[in-house]
Image (cartoon, rainbow, N blue to C red; front, side, top):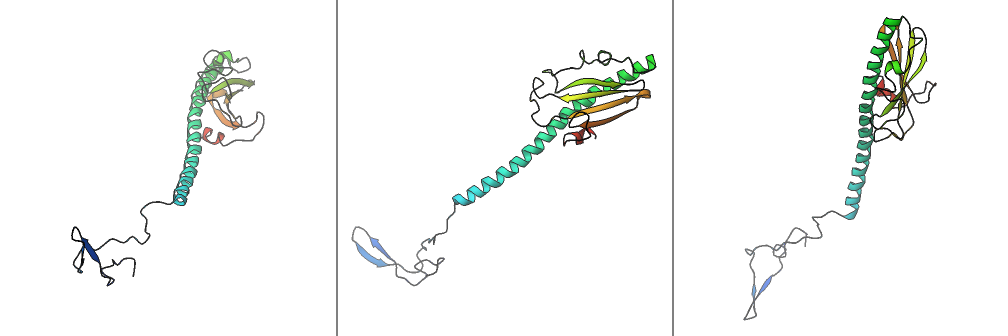
Length: 191
């Protein structure tokens, strides 16, 4: 007998008991066919479910990593905006004084408008680093504690901006202060 055939199709005699007389009557081939499953299941096995769960987990972890990178990139918008304001302030200072040599962090708003240490309202804190007569170096440092939540837990990175006389500027990012190493977080900063 083949799995798709019913006992009637295979030439077997099928009998139906007629109650209450208990007589046995043969069933002809026109009687409805009996379903035979032959072990075919309409459910998933445990192995199939585990494989699907593992695949979904891998895809979710990849998506989470991308999501974290997008969020950190949006946090860099804070630095871009604040550096833009500081650049305009430094340029106005240069136009008024003729050089940057006496430009202080307070003149740029660091400490008043922009935090000089981690503050719960900001993801970064800011520093005026070196000053010459024709340029000023500004740093932003990602808060690892005490800053706006969530604080950064990875390798520290430092976006920076050189402001030059005449209002021109250049930007960059360093993993360790004073080095040329860059991190994956620095890539969106340069865009």
